[in-house]
Length: 175
Image (spheres, rainbow, N blue to C red):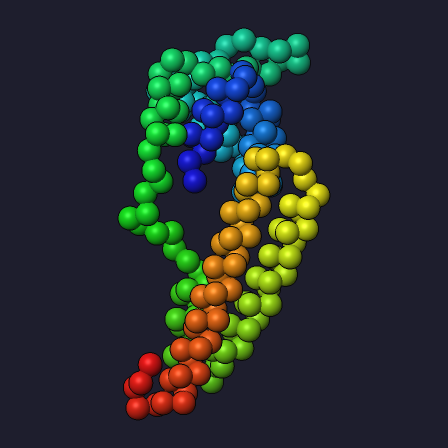
């Protein structure tokens, strides 16, 4: 996830200071990706150094207000105009865990899969509950993404479980 581009998008709506950006980001992303305030200010410093935002004005409480520059708007337009690359998938802890569980001595990998399926089902129910409680479209779209990912994870876990059963039924290598 690009914090840089997220901050540019928020600043395209209106000038803000760091804590406002953090709150707006977390609100928009259904608080599923907590953003460290230090990361916000470090990113703002880099964006200012690169000429994508400018700071300077302060509000009545002394907060430095940042606003998007023309170069920042062009960067944001390029980001929105390009696809998110899928060439280097993120490291998936669950896939690694299941892969290692298959060959771990004395461990039942189906139990690992069942525990995860239960946890993922609970998460999916939580996302759906939150979707019923919101009228904020951005929040709902993030929850949709999380729900779809949970549904895909459940399908993958079902696939793993079925593969393990086939291997157990045919130890001669039929998969």
